[in-house]
Length: 355
Image (tube, rainbow, N blue to C red; front, side, top):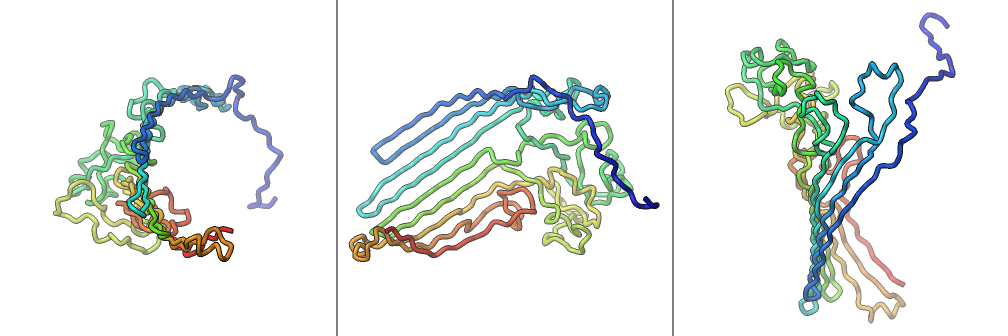
């Protein structure tokens, strides 16, 4: 084999997870209450209240200590329970004024969910448990400000976060709360935050009409109360070791200036301490988007019937024209990561023909 070469002996057989002969499908109990209202042959309102409870969700037990496994992984079992409830509202209005026909459609949806049972260890601190939290709830270090001086640093709790020891920090670095008050900043101080990384409230508005062959339509969409972790390459200076500063580099912390809450930390080549997932990097990604706009013109049938067509319409439209969001303008607030194809703003000019 030589001194440096290695080889793989095989085939290698290993024992997998223990079997669970009683594993089965999870069960779901759904309840819906629907209300439909129609008035004047113009207004239609639909309200849907829903409630769903799921039981028997496959999950790995959390209350079995690692020493009890004897080197063999335990199977997933039907233990998990969740609940979800909310409402959806649709309002449609169709009307005409003379030769002008128009319609307005509005929809609104909101929901709330909870993990009912997760097999959390009994003695685990309540804030570290998954049970009782929203599905997909995230835990973050709570950044409440910046160190104002070396005295602030050395009088604070010691940190086990990368580059977070007292002699490595400088004024302007983020200050994290010692949530469990044990004198050490570590992963046990990551507390659940209110906002989720998916929207629980969405709204949409469609408006359109036509007048003697000339038509238009407009589609608006909004997602509220959704937060996402910042993209590291867009937030910190010198990303991946590159000599590159972010556009807001001049907004970094400055001594003597009074700030309301955490601000951009002091510049570092190594951002290991400041860049942990905290409430500083977890920002509001709610957005309002103009998804589609179209203007079209349909020629009268008496004109196109001479060339044996049933429809001839010219149109100009645009998709994803504008997005308004408090998040970084370099990313799409609808998606979480940076390794995705960016949102495309598209314009079309075309013709629709019916034979």
